[in-house]
Amino acid sequence: MTLNEVRDVLNAEVLTGEELLDAEVHSACGSDLMSDVLAYVHNQSLLLTGLVSPQVVRTAEMMDMCCVIFVRGKRPDASILQLAQDRGLAVLATDKRMYQACGLLYTAGLNE
Amino acid sequence: MNGDDRIHLSYQVEGGDLTRAGEASSGVKQTLRKLGIDPGTIRRVSVCMYEGEINMVIHANGGLAMVDVGLDDITITLTDYGPGIPDIDKAMQAGWSTAADSVRDLGFGAGMGLPNMKKYSDEMKIKSIVGVGTTVTMVVKIPS
Image 1 (cartoon, rainbow over the protein chains, first blue to last red):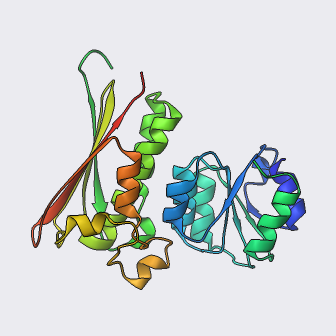
Image 2 (cartoon, rainbow over the protein chains, first blue to last red):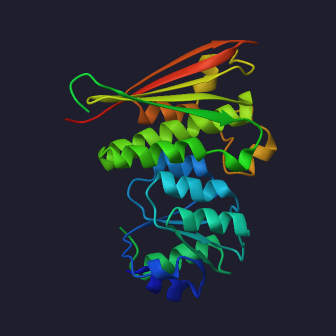
Image 3 (spheres, rainbow over the protein chains, first blue to last red):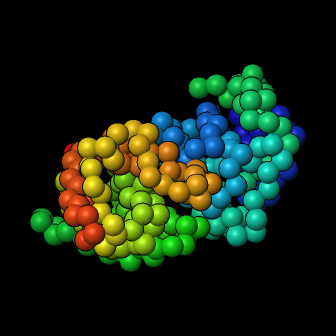
């Protein structure tokens, strides 16, 4: 599915990277522990997290991901968004909780 | 690159500022991309370097990161003048951590750093003297 569809499924707000939303994604990962993302992620292109820190963007960058989605209504500050923009990452935010957000995306077909 | 020529990259990693941790790793990643290194190798180097950089920032008040790029391998050498590691075997255990809560707020400090670095590198050596500092050397081989 595309990031546009991801946004619709999660009723998410686009915080940066509107121009990147045509990108296709095939799998995702949900975690608040960045070391686990570094340890276990292979080709997931989407990171769902409730952790608000610049290291979320850095971790996504290291793992060649294209989008970070903040769950549970978390909102990153301007410096985090700027970093994401500089690194070519889209950032979305949804009020849904992690479990629900992952479940909705999985059901909608993001299940590789 | 021709023959035995190697490219040397060097970064000063600033200590203390947890929010900036990862800048050196990001620089390395971008340089490796420009050099045309394959994406899988770049990702392995990125994880090794990033976890090591986080360690230098949180435990050792920064240090020096050197990355040496050859045709067959990439060698990362991270040197700090921090407190040293008293028990390296223990530090290598997944889940063992001495990190502060402020580090956990960043999504690290769960005792996965050194195990991750070992997992993603082909060779890893740690030399550490308590009260003097630590040098971690990692080699990532480039598939032919």
